[in-house]
Length: 353
Image 1 (cartoon, rainbow, N blue to C red):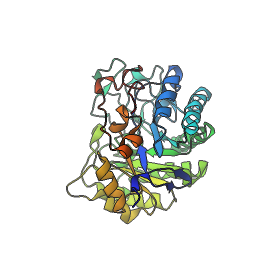
Image 2 (cartoon, one colour):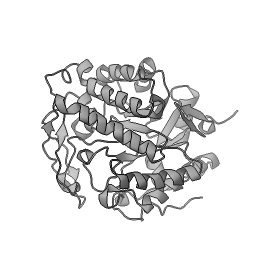
Image 3 (cartoon, one colour):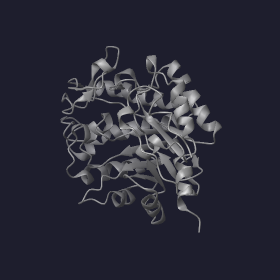
Image 4 (cartoon, rainbow, N blue to C red):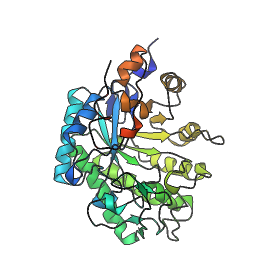
């Protein structure tokens, strides 16, 4: 009997050689101008045996930046930087999609290196501090409320970012709808207290996120667009209560767009079967993520609860994770103190088997 982890699968138009996905992880290694560096090229190339790599979050515009040294996908230089990444991954037989991450209100202005608005669904600051350029957490800026009149331009920024990712040679995009960033801010009533058609009921709160997914699908084709959610995640000031009331309708509306995949961080909530909620509302492929080990990941696939499985932390110190799982080899442990330092140590210097 074949091992389900190592069988091919299609996520929309994206053909994977195996079902092991590298989850998106911010690593703060971009260079001046938020351009991907040669170090980033090496990092992603090392991990190209994954069935699919989902990149760290890349901001679709300057206003979308909230953290230090995160890459963008809105300038010509950034496109060329990402082209080197995509070419290196493809040269090793891999597939790679870009996560589009607009931080919304989760912004420390000093991290940007330029002046720009901080925007969000409502003028409510993120209650959680965010690391500044020196790594010390500080309070975030209070955002201004996004007006209805500026939403078309914001949708176009997302669409152009997706076109830029494809122009750079990547295989698709994933919209970051999790972890308290802009799309999640629209979805969640703690950060969205609007009184217009974009706030209040779940139907209203999903309206802008669905518009973004539609804009991405129109820009590059629905079969190259996925999205990531984390129902019940309180990160960055989200209200974790009753996630099914929001994410059921959101996922169902997204399903109507014919997207490539839904990537879910299963929080292991005691009162919600997250994967069952997705299966009931989404007919496309599911990528599951929940601190999985090889055996638990394999069990999800064998039970038909997901079409692929993603690993985050395991990929930090194990660039050859696919080969290690195949060999039953032990996994190396990462040095978490080096996650965001901007240097080679703790990034590209982990050995392979």
